[in-house]
Amino acid sequence: MTRRIETALLVDDDDAFRTTLQGALRRRGVVARTAATIDEGLVALEYEPVDLVVIDYRMPRGDGLSALAQYRKLQPDAAIVMLTGFGDIPLAVAAMREGADTLLSKPIDADKLLREAATLRERQRPPPSASASAAPTPPPGSLKLDDLEREAIRAALRESGGVVATAAKLLGIDRRTLQRKLKKLGG
Image (cartoon, rainbow, N blue to C red; front, side, top):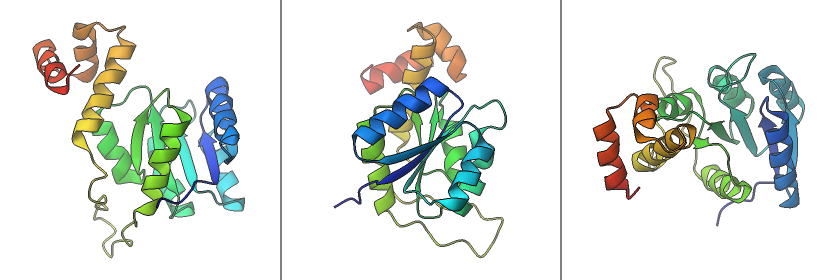
């Protein structure tokens, strides 16, 4: 049985998105606080721990990726989810290497977010490595390459308005390669 998410911190510079997600989480019984900047979120965590940290990748004063290690240090047991509208596989790998448990695409459904976070909290995080230079190994099954690829393709298609050639450019791959991947993924 997965542990229920009871508290959350939403760090995003988009006021409308942040407050909408906060309201959706509150309607589901989660005590959700918000922060508009990376620094504001870090200060909030110093005083009140949470079960879930949701952080945006692109923010005007510091991106979420560079702050993940600080958030993980403050909240070692929390599920940390990075959200982005610009997802790709290298970003997902970098996010997990820096301390996120997963990368999800915006917009996010509150129920899906809570299910994913509860599942992530069940997994035991590996103890800190004795070697500071060694990257932490993600738990088995947390890097679902097909899921990450599918999410990156969907995000690129949304951003390109469904134009395959434009989506392929956003992903940095050839149009024919994207068409093959879409066929393989059933898109």
